Length: 301
Image (cartoon, rainbow, N blue to C red; front, side):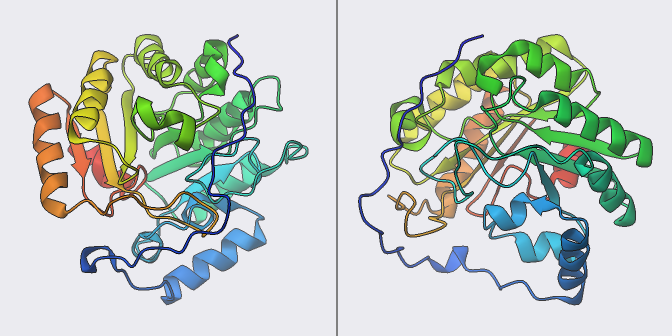
């Protein structure tokens, strides 16, 4: 297993003021009755959602539609990525053995047709949390046999046996995000490796050819157009089926600042370029996120 060294992320030394958003990025704050009901149910079952932890701008829309992305393995990450607002800890604590069942119970209560399961990074666990991931997939399958299951996994430090363990549980879609271009990895994903993430995606397609593979990146961190094009070329070489591209938004003042707000027209150009490479689908827009309306992604792909 290729274990990467621990590196302290190159975050701003002091809190950075957040740049004002352009009009195309402004969304309404959550507060609908459906959102409030789902939030209460989540808390009753002690579940975490990436919608809340990552401060997703689409939270109000998705929860109003009765959909959510479940975040397992706790709510503390062992990595310190520059873009992420999830709290960091070297010792996140023991896993909740009831979590897989609680996720399945919540998904069943919501009568979901498409269930998305993601997680924090748990480099402190010998298997990276892969067995817990697999158990959650199996529980959801038992509770909702007709539902599609999508997973958004960490890189498991390049441990392909862990990746296989998750895939063998039978997800319909395997998603692992590249997040950014290789030049920016040391700043944005200091404890990850670009080539290792590509290898995880390539292995996923080889190990489970029938599953849809998917990856995404955040733009506006200082990448160039050619670097984004090369990222998409690399993903096609890894046999990835679907790509998501969205605008990076600084979640807290302690996270990396936004370098640029990418205009909608450029996102449209990226979508057209990706489709020309042969991806089944390219979802590219300022508010696109890897789990945004994932049910629609699966239907169209």
